[in-house]
Length: 293
Length: 293
Image (cartoon, rainbow over all chains, first blue to last red; front, side, top):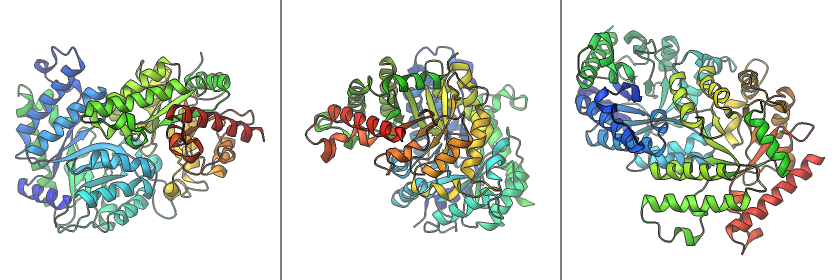
């Protein structure tokens, strides 16, 4: 049986585009026509949803996946969460793989509740999780992956500037992120799909290409979700370090570089949807070119 | 000016009870009269809220704080989040300190969104956060603490069985949790209150008393949130390791041991509210006795 990562890889092959669009939908990204009459929580919820759904309409045939960053929805309490779920349902309807970027983690019994919340049978395809609590905080998510054919991405080497403070500490001859990479490979070893990748993946930032390459070379069954491309400074060649020799093994996230592309000089004068599509095509071509080398 | 931890310590002194009640409200904990007609998401939301508010009524004069475990609300999407916020508002109205146990963390720009979501001027008093991304994932929360007189508890040494996998790794002569303890002390050094404790605190499990004592002795300005008492196996004497010589410096969480006390043999036949109050009194006395030694 194909695991969720097989299905994602199939979509990446079909679109020729290993990109996930990050719906980090800040209210400032919305065009004026969507924000001029925001009076209630319901208004905000509807505006976020409309912005997202029109982006999905503009992108679903050329981009395989969306990643919804929960923080920007949690800002609006239950109104935001409604927008998050409505967006996710719409993206699924359009055939996209849907990731909930929530970076959850807790002790075992509570991790079970989180896993049930996000990886139920009709839930998200993937969720991001944090490894700091160790195996018993991860196992409930891994179990749900097996039960409902879902996936997770565990933080290994994040893209932010201070990520090295803990992640690069030497823990007996290897940095902490490599140790975490080994745990991720172990957690996912029973869920390896037809393409050779587990449903238990890792978050590996494009801003640290040498470290991504080390993880890629050592943990060959771990699929990578790669943030940090674009606004955070990562280039196509940096992201390429997370891919295997066949040009597979990773999907690269871009959030504001696509969803707010219309606010940049490059796409000036275009609608937000047309600019997003053009930016997604440019990213696809940039990655294709980087992966050829 | 008193920081949020001064206010919490004042309430602990007034009640003689360094306990926070964890509202890890699983639907199975609710008595039958609250669950017999749950048909819609609104029904669940109302039932969770009613259960919580009646517990707050039964406890607010003898317990200084509640900690709401977000996972059990996120299970019900926007319906659950509505219950979470309604519960929080009610507990604040009753004068309790309210902690959102969300263990959030992300890159800086996203951490800003989380900090805005949870530590706004009218938001929760405290939120729990995860340190794995390093300083730039924490600083936005620390800034909100200063701006709105709020607090955070950063995971240092968690109470779960596999917490040692990463947290006890040797990182150059000290375990990772001690290194994290040092970062927490540094992050909070500009927000130390009249009682000597910062608004930037640490999560330190009662299940590892020797490690709690090492953290307590080394980082004297860091206030501890102590999970793991009760159902997870921690006793009064284990929790006592997180307190300073004056019997201050920590608050101990108990969730199911209080909110589901009526389901245990000890409190059989009592209503859930009466059992919760009796269990909270027993815990207060247990901690008082452990702290005298």
